[in-house]
Every structure is written in C-alpha cells, then in structure tokens.
Length: 456
Ligand code: ADP
Image (tube, rainbow, N blue to C red; front, side, top):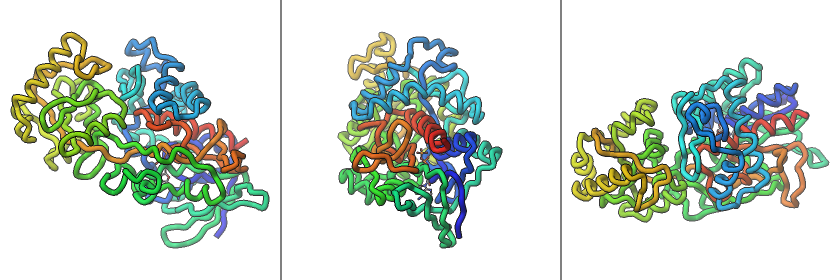
C-alpha cells in the first residue's frame, strides 16, 4: 500500500508532536508514524519538567537574576563543553518561547508558583507541568493533533528511508503490527523524531561497553535507536555516541526513574549503607551515578522528611509510584531516624550523626562536607522517608548530526536533502551529560524548528 503526504514524522514523542504541529500550521499535509501501540515515548514517562530562563514562574517566585547567558553557560558546562555552542545558544535563546508556546498554543498547564533546580543548574529554572509528569504534555499534544486533524498511525514501525536518484529523502517504508508493508511518500521530506537508544542493550554496548545489561533502563521499550540506524544507512553522520547517561535515583527492582525522589531538588540527602553522605545531592547526574556505584553494594539511600514533602509535594504528585515502592520494600515511612535506619540495616547512631550535621549546616547555610549549592534543609522533624535507589540508563546524548535548521548532515558534513531530525535521536546538544529539564527544552525547541523548516 502507498500513501502520500508532504511531511512524514517518525515518532510520536515530544519532538515528533512539536514538528508535526508546526509543519501542519505552516500549511503542510502531515502524518506521524509511531511504532508502539500508544503515543508519548520517553516524553510521556519523564517528569516533564522544562528549563527556560526568565519565565513567568521565575517572576512569580521572585527569581530575577537568571538569563539566557547563564542558562547557556550551565548547559555547556554541564556537558563538559562538548555540546555544539551554536546549538546550545539556540536552545538557551528559544527555550522561553518554547515554554510559552506549550502554555499558550498547546495549552499545557504548568504550576504557577513552583520550580525545580535540577543538578548542574545555577538557578531554579525548571517549569513543572501539573501532575509532575510528561503526561500533561502528551495529553495536550494529542488533543492538538486531533484538533488539527493530523493523523497518527500507531503500531506502524518506520524501517527504511527512501531516496531518489539525487539522494533526496522522499519517504519512509513502514510495517504495521499485522505485517503489512506501507510506503509513505513525503513530498517535502521526513523528520526523524524516534528518540534515543537506551532500551537497546546491544547498541549501548557497541558504543559504550560499560553500560551492559547489568544496568536496567528508565526508558520506554520503543527507545531502540531505529532512527539512527535508518539514517546511517543513507550515510548520515553520528556523533557523541559513547555518552550515555544513567539517572542516579531509580527503583532497584524495576529500573524505573523515581519521581517521588524529586524531593532531592529541595533538600533530600543521599547516604550510603554506612549512613554517611558521599556526594553533593545537586551534582550532575553522571557524577552522582558514579558516586553511588563507588559505594558498598552500588546503591544509595535518599532521606527526607515531611517538611520537605510539604515543599516538593512529590509523594502527593506520584501516589502510585509511592505505593509501589512501599510494596517493594524500597521506600519506608518512619517516625524517627532510628526507625528509618533500622528498616534498611543502617547503624542508627551513624545516620543520626549525619542528620545532626545536616541540621547544623542547614542553620548556618554552609554545607562544610559537600558544599550543597542550594544550602541544606533541616531534617529535625519527623516523620521521615527513606528510599533505596540505583542508577539506571536514562538518556543517550549521542545521535544524528544536525545543523541549526535541524537538517541532517552526512559523513562528509553535507546536508541530506529532505531529511530533518530533532529530539533525543540527535547528538549535538548535550555533550557528555544532559542536565535535568533540558530534554524537554531541547525536543520542543528543535522539534518546532524542524516542523517550520521542512514545511518551507
Ligand atoms: P523525544 O524525546 O526525542 O521526542 P521520545 O522517546 O519521547 O523522543 O519519542 C520517540 C518516539 O518514537 C517513541 O514513541 C518511539 O516509540 C517512537 N519510535 C521509535 N522508533 C520508531 C520507528 N522505527 N518507527 C516509528 N516510531 C518509532
């Protein structure tokens, strides 16, 4: 069977939705192909937080000293200056516009008076969608595509990019779940928005042998690098592939990212089996992950109290995750520090000594052990929450090489006509390490650019 559109978008995550909506608004006839039975990808199961400087929420909470330059510098530094400065500059300059577009055009609701400060950021600048997950984004994206009558073909796996004699990409060969082959012709071109390769263990090992199957993954099962492989078949360039991020705080039973543990951004501490802190809790994800893997048993415990829950409200936001962790015995609510320590066989006196120091540092505003950048919070009052956690594969920083218009480049550095890419499938933004809240900023910003450019 054959179908013809102006634009074919591969992948119904945040990048694919953004590209499809912008292309459609610019007048193109668009289709989205999604290989899973449902839309959303990693965007759906993420926390959904999005960084932008100078937002309305920063104004509302009195943060007046953030800037495009600071966001740019944090992002470059967070990736060890391996990101492409031109691309990071675009991200920093356009993130605010992307956030406003989500709010005004897609009708995404963000909390009006709360922000997260993820590791590596020098300011609190991550907007939080209601519900604290990507579900808010994907639900609203889906509603918008329905309104714009953009068809989404689920259970439709893109397998091959088609090119004409001149090398221009002219369509996609796909297979439905019933095994039917369908050719989607694309008059203007194809946007690859198929996400990363965190769920593809073989591909992980190929580019970074340390991230073998001893690691679980936080990722959606659809995250298998298909877009990278398909594009390589027509000589697309790839870069930065060895840089694969683990998320430090995941469920030791399932590998799933813990969003309840986002209380860390408001002052929850990390301790090891000896009840001692071992890293600054707002360090970069790669640094915290490595620090955890260096501890006895290669796991950590996160500890916080009800006062902090009152600020972060992460348990209130994620009741299902909370219940699951309790059931698994990976999270425990304790009246006292002693009680919390005993549940996980930590020496109560040692944990108490750690907490006493933290309380002291909270008073003076100076963490003499790890220099917590936001200043520690008091853990004097119970009840407490203590949670066991391990690092798990989360984000693949490497991928396709794109230019500032999101055109995919080949191994000679030349544009492949008709081929665009955006989102986690690309490899030029985050360098060695993507900062928290920067994925949504990236996929929306460059997804929109891809949609606008391809429709031209
Ligand atoms: P991003 O954050 O870059 O938008 P996501 O992981 O959110 O990435 O979304 C990527 C989507 O692409 C997922 O829903 C995934 O199932 C889908 N996908 C991956 N490979 C294919 C493929 N070969 N054909 C169609 N869809 C794909």
